[in-house]
Amino acid sequence: MGTYHAGSLAVQELLGVRDRAEHVGRSLGQGIKPVAAAFLEIQPLLMVGAADPETGRVWASPLTGMPGFVRATGPRQMSVVTDAGRGGQDPLAAALKTPGTHMGTIALDPRTRRRMRLNGRLRPTPRGFAIEADQVFSNCPKYIQRRESYETVADRTPGTPRSLSELGSREREFIRTADTFFLATVHPGGADVSHRGGNPGFVQVTSSTELIWPDYPGNAMFLTLGNLRTDPRAGLLFLDWTTGDTLQLTGEAHADVTAGGVRFTLTRALWTPAALPLRWSAPEYSPANPSG
Image (cartoon, rainbow, N blue to C red; front, side, top):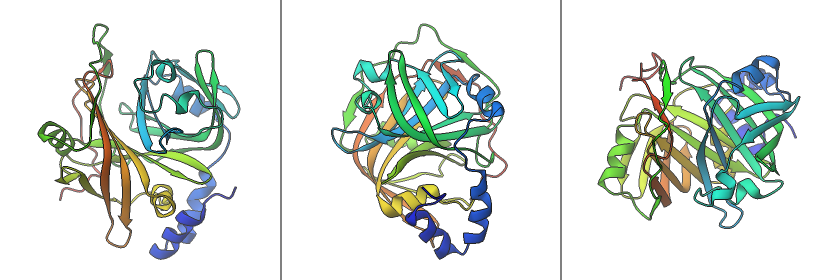
């Protein structure tokens, strides 16, 4: 498989950044370098994205554990210790048990504003799953809000997930005040999870089933927008960095690449109170965030 598929190439050509994208694309590899392996081993949080094999819907989900629950276990293999695929509560539970599932992942560390993406095919294991990497790469720190520290709240118990067909007032406010979300997309040869960040309010809720957000300038690869050009299915994950509440959305996203914006239409949502045991410190907003 080449560095970019047809969707990403089309967006790069449309915006006149093909040469830059070719240069940046040399950073995409299949191997997990020692510095990347060390980065993974100190993370308490990993976001994963895939299409549910039963419904075809694309979701993004958070996985947590004590540092070390995500590790490089080979030059091209990442292993994750988790019970998410066995509990049945998560919308990606079936995907995490299905051999060969195209899975995208991103580990983002707010303490250092570093992030690492690893995409590949999933293999279930007795303690969770492993991913054989097709793509491994790091992104710049743009639009990542810095959070200096976190603590694990041992007695925090996840609430019962609530499935929604539209966003109520609580969910709308949750999105409006968010400074970060994660976006899962797919294409015929794989899956991907990317990070989107900005000052609170950068995601607008235009109705009970529709969101829009700006696509800020990034690395010129346009992997996410390229995926959406090929397949509009998308999954969004919003999380409360203090309470651990999560809001997962699945639907379709359409990008207006010349206007620099994305419009998302909701199919289903899942609200889970206290889903994550992590409590992060207050954010220091990225200096790259547009103020408007």
